Length: 474
Image (tube, rainbow, N blue to C red; front, side, top):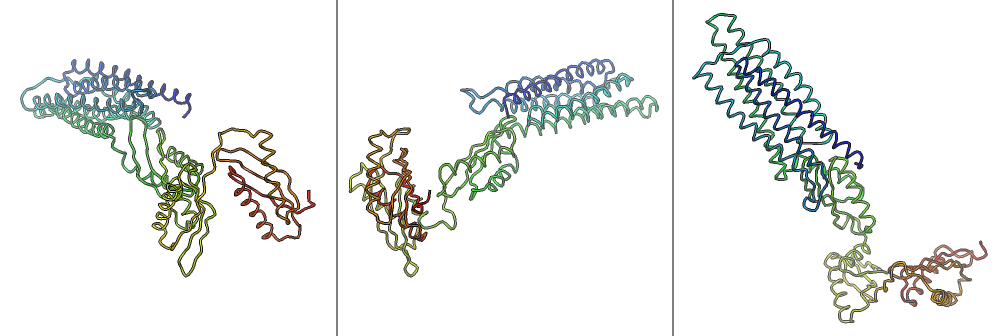
């Protein structure tokens, strides 16, 4: 999400929360005035409920403002959990309201009588309340779903509850009105107002417990049901991912924080592994929406991995490098010959110990290998990044390469010599001319021979590429 769209989202969320405050003020005052005038406990209960909605709307408004602030030095994961705290506070307020409503309703049912006037104003205020509640709940639900805001969703649930509770109160007022029209034998219908208040309280208790359960779950980092499995499935479908390891999900307000581990072929380069991790992040981010995804990559041996790839991976794990890995198979057993590069500053004894440890690791992971023969050589001395060759050094290197080429009668000459300094040594590329009638296999053997001679005789060479072309061709 861009910075402009983020600001627009915050403005829309704040406006939704603020408009809820205005609506709650209007409904609370209207219900309180009519409830006191008519003496209806159902309307007074609704006034108290709306008063608590006003407090909850204020909490939501300030929570949305605070939760939208970016992470800082003290809150590295942002301020999203303020929304969850506000939802918990709303739950406690609603439960306190229910205690008073239930207490007063029981007293009116069994211990005292209160005169109630079921006027047109009483019905009008409840009908108006329902109309406002429908409008506000739809707007809040729309904003809550759009921006994954638990605070706005809690506020929307409050207004949705008011729709049903106001409907119940209207039913209670209707019973009171009927009791005055049907005669004294129907006087017991006046108790319908208190019964309606009890029903309102039960609805509020139910909603409060739902809100509280969700708020506490978010505060103790309870993962949304089934989301970790969906994330693992989505990540596992990313090309290059072998398997998916542990997935951890935590929610803070509207944001989700996801940590997961994916297993990648250990022969993949660092760049390839990074690209796979980036693709996993993109896929998971599109699934969870507003959130932060961190992917940890573990190297694993893939099925079908060749013996040289396995040997190279084991060496890399131990901080060594290998090349010229040759495996000879005799009656189902393998004999491996290889060159092992070790840090140049090691003594022979230290180098031999590290190579012996590597050989043991290879034998342990590849039980089909019978014996290993290794050639120890120093690693190429890394060159400083961005270093350049002086004309004198480049000329000297060119002469050394030319002397090597002259030793090979099959090569008729060479040109286009490129010498490029790299962090791990010199990168050499050259074009050689040979008899046009040579077979591809013979030309390849010549190129391979030149590459090996250059790397063996000239120190500090990282890579050599030899292009053999027919003599006399431009």
